Image 1 (cartoon, rainbow, N blue to C red):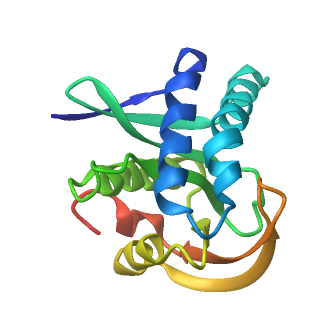
Image 2 (image 1 turned 135 degrees about the vertical axis):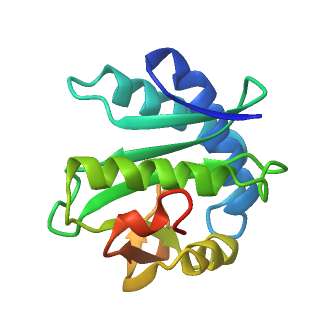
Length: 176
């Protein structure tokens, strides 16, 4: 059974492990293999520890299936407020996809975005070569608003697309 709960600093190792596992499954050919296999886990752990130790930690929900962490979502509402509320991460473990976990995480993030910033869009960036994620966001009604070359955590460059939902309420459970 799926349950979503707020995440905190104690969850940083689990979130980092989910993050790295998702990247290893989805970002082959986008990020270098040596980065994914040798550095991503430690860098993600440092990132999540730092985020949770910040004066204003991010809004993060952890998805657990029968008590085991299987995914998470993170909002950074003030990252670029002129674009809307930024959905910085949405990851579901390989092998857990297709069970509605991502849709539930997206709905939770959309509900929070609608609550904290009524009238502002919800947006995210996704690597253009991540075809599976692009297909999901398109199916959920996301509109591609921008394409740009970005610096990756691995120190390389990749094309990214900004998907946006003018009305995040369309993603709330039962509406998407």
